[in-house]
Length: 521
Image 1: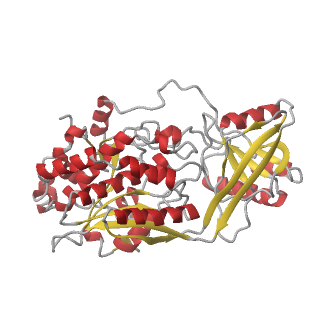
Image 2: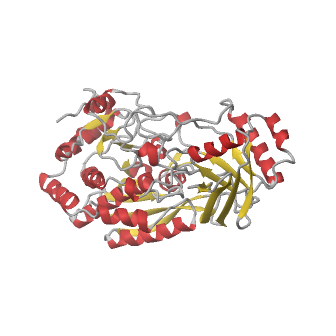
Image 3: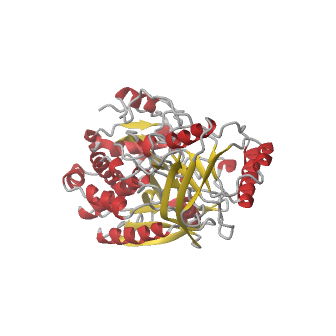
């Protein structure tokens, strides 16, 4: 056993009877059943292909996302789960948007087809269009004037904001034992030690870190584009010839934005350098994107009902976000999390678990645009208008997955010291799966944050990062990014922890939160 834990000796006194009654693990016989089903009869590969190849991309409120919701509900029903359904979570002013066709190539000074990704919620070209490329470099308000009357019918290459430098670290990695021990000892885990974070880095060149000034410049730029009507705007984002995914600030009823595409910095930089050296660069493009007036975010939910008359209305929640960006199939981000949570529920249903508390799966919508799905769930069941709802005091635990498809090595406990003794006890029979570490700290902003803001116990797993930072939010985020062996172990771990939490006579106490820290739902 290689756990490194920080447990204070007075915790039981501080948190009273709740902790005294806790620290109960399930039987070794049930552990054997769950591990046998999860490891020897795994359906991970089948679910993985379903979630990626079959469902495709799942941009929030898109027709693809609606299709995915329906099919996932059907799949959860096939597993035998109770009441599989979609639930309205939140309004979504952007509405739906789907890609129909994307083509882009440089035609002068020579022909070269590019791999590009349309910027979500931007418009279409008028069929196949051709035009000259110009570098569009707006760093301050005064720069706007030099483009007035000069960019209509042009293809604008935004000034580069990213510079590629050779990296000497491996593209994929696992945590070392030394790194895991450091996580377990450090109470200030931050984005530098988390696998979360944007690939490539780099901010908008020349713009001070002043949101008000940035938004003013952005609005002026958008007004210029709407007036001048260039054929397309091209941004360089992403490396290794793989474009990123991103979206425009659009609301239903606004004029359709100018077409925009994202291309990798290698191709974008090539055209910028050609122009700056005096060459005439031309492109041809055909972009067809479809807007729909669907202003709702939905979650997909199903349960294994609780059986204890006194505890059955309490909820152990497990989840991941179902939505993705539109370029690939959202495999690592975050089909991987959905795959694990769905398989965990299948395992529990297959072995015939009859939990005391209800075990619920929630596959969230709208995470990428601002945690819409989980915040909507909070408003419906747990916490709204600075007040607790009936579900608040029936909330036992939330386990979230959103760091790619790497192996679980432990859990970030979000500085809630009261959680240590619970999770440590539940880990008893799964330590042979090398699930050994509890970190007092936290990880990046994802769905569990919606619950943490109200003090509820909601935790994210410590995962091997693999190549997550290279691939998420790109067109490369496909089935090939999934580590099926790791996901098999992860699902088995989630299944075990969920049933332990469902049957423990105690619950992890809510972490006290100051009024000014409360969520404003």
